[in-house]
Length: 485
Ligand code: NAD
Image (cartoon, rainbow, N blue to C red):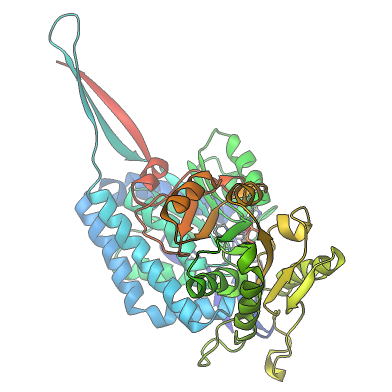
């Protein structure tokens, strides 16, 4: 059985208190690994080793050398892509095609930020002074220090490297707390860091849970200078409270209840294909996924029928099997949550267009966290199923009659992460995109990501923006130097 260890100061180790926990396969519910749980002393050792690296080789390394190392990390990840994929699939059960994409993005997250830091401009202001000699102001960027990185399980490698890439590129060191559900790729990345010569202490991984465990030890540690988090809004709020002690900055990427808006003039095939992906990709466990679909009334019946056909054509099964498009949910616990919403939708009066239950899987997979892709109609916007993030392969579809109406309804939730708008009317696309309360709006597409663009959530979906130069705002301190001439 695989045993996953912490990675502290360039070495793999068990927790100081000798504790470990089990990792189960989402496909079968069998135990596939034991994971060393980091104690307070381990988090402390990781933070201390990070501080040492900042004062030593990493802190003194020239930018060009740092950038070269990060590119080597990316190259080595690509070289070991099959291993990363296998680890990600073992932890999550996601189909191989999805895992391949996510692992490639993991490597890209190092390359893009290696490029960004090389090309970052600064600002200079000449000012006049009473003696007529003037002064010169210029701004320089310095690393923030030790960054605590707290990660979710839904796209483990992609989302972790989305933080670790820019943090390291800016000269910081990191202590990563992967989700307890997905420890493997973070550990594998430790091997890569070691292999390409990233100095010890720059990249640390501590495994464990949230409250009363590693997550809390990390986010309350006084030696952590900044905390970057992806996960549920409730957890983000708890982390913000922890960060208030010591007035440490936070970057929070949190939950969503994203709308897909289909106008009657949309390219129907593209809208169906895009909406289907946005509802069901990664078994609906995508923060940017669509759980509320609004369709302009003339198209409503046609769209629902097409979505039903497409949902029923999804193939659930073993990740490497040809044609499989959907895996299980991450865990039995998450499955219980999703199934409770499936039941609640019926209680609230939904019409179940398709799905709504548990699929009949082959004997070997009966213990896994499988659920059916599900489409509902007929609920009011106030229904819990239409307001709360479910994070499963499901969506509610409702008709609308006007642009103003759909904007108001799309905005009537606490979240504001992303939206997808489907229309051929260019002026309308601009109008609606401007009015939707979200950090990201796609028009006639979904999940089309240029990593240089700002990414983050509005309202309770996030605080701060990351991506391209926007990441530098969080991962560096901008310092003004004023020189009297
Ligand atoms: P989660 O909030 O349950 O856990 C995320 C991480 O926080 C885990 O590592 C967990 O151990 C840790 N944690 C939990 N409580 C903590 C505490 N009190 N202190 C410190 N650490 C703590 O989220 P999840 O279930 O792993 O992920 C799913 C959620 O993530 C969904 O809400 C989804 O929308 C969101 N998400 C958002 C984005 C985005 O970019 N906005 C991306 C992916 C996922």
